[in-house]
Image (cartoon, rainbow, N blue to C red; front, side, top):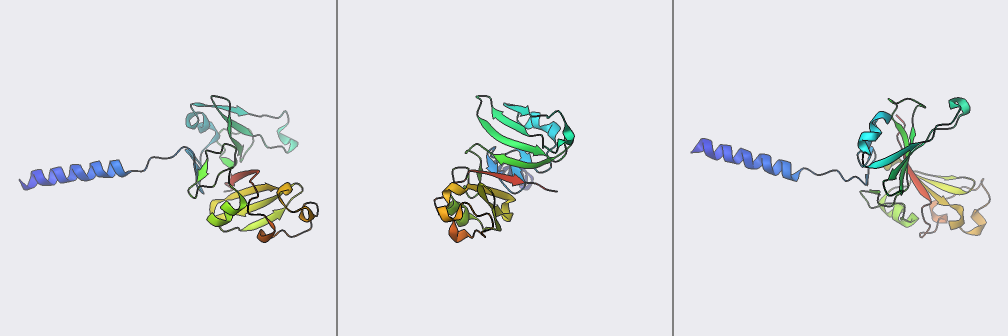
Amino acid sequence: MKKSFLKVLSIVIVILFVACKKKQNPFEIGKQHIGFLTDSTQIKDLKTIFASDSIAQFISGDAFAGNQNSIEVFEKGGAKLLVLTPKQELDSTAVIKSVQIIDSRYKTSKNISTLSTFKDITSAYKISKINNLINSILITVSELNASFAIDKKELPSNLRFDMSLKIEATHIPDNAKIKYFFINWNR
């Protein structure tokens, strides 16, 4: 009787363990993953990861021109999902260096997506750095290995044209929309 009870108990524990195991969300963004894509994924594995999607790779004629070869991932319906930049040009064993998030279904665990605003970002994460670029400002969040670009058109007019200005978080309107964002995996 004791043996059968222990046997049933162990089966119940195994079933509970398997049932409680969290299924990976294909649109979840984390510090070291985006859906099924991780910071150690090699270029050659992309066809398996995005088996139901289309992959388009831009290959320039001269690998020494200094341009990165981007890999674009599209849904079968044609919508662009992601733009991947490999760490090494023309190497199928290279890992991904950065991922630009295009599709709004990709979200962080704190619900930040391409549809979020500056207030959404500051409410969810600590801002590590703000860079003043030509046409945009770049908000860096180290906790996520992410950089968020906000078009300077979202800023007050007196802050748009002087690149020498140090932009502070208080200068950025809460409702400023994200132009795009990307995750960096520099290993």
